[in-house]
Length: 332
Image (cartoon, rainbow, N blue to C red):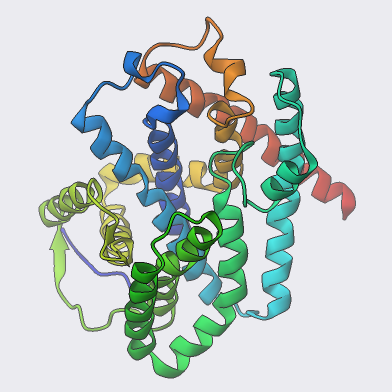
């Protein structure tokens, strides 16, 4: 059986990509030695762990790519649409942030108003180690209307210009300044958003080759190995290439019957990705991690910690998603 390059990603394809991003995200945070009081007991100088930690950063590119791709296909791409999605994200995040603050108090960390305010918009990560994506999401939703218009009018020229200018700007903005680094983050990852928009609007009509399963598995291995190394080459974000390629390879692999169970699991996980993103960080963030890592129940094993964080986050995320549905029905 040979599979052609898809003309578009289905909703299940994008959810499966989000599900994969969730797994990579948790793996990345589990493998960061800074999140442990005694990293030597868990993360010795192991080159495999270091490479897998870098691979986990692909989650960022996958979330960005799917966000831009889905946005580009919406009928309503107005500023009002963007602001409504920003508000929806912030309301969910703020509800959980209150819970994080309470846990921090239990752990003996008293909140400061300035610190809480910065955490509310992802400008500080004391309560959620991965909440920097909040300010990037706000940035992305604000620029995507203009990016889509630019892609529609200039096509591949807009994509090439985005990659070139953002790469140069990111290279020039390398600094230790916290605020400039946030600006650099936004610029550095912008080409991933632009690529998602381009593929949604223009697709890749020039690739006619049909791939068999062996070719697809070989490409998957190559992309995963490439993902184990730097995401930054002279200021240029490698996710601009690796993430869309990974998305296409996986979408074609999902056409095989032998992968349907994997896809179903990833789709389910992807449907809970927002809450999984928020909830899993409670185990690693500065203000709350002592509650878990000082407990005798916290295992001294990377694999067990991954499973503990994954299944606890999954259970809580499932309950939160169901509670949200009930609240939404009541409001209707």
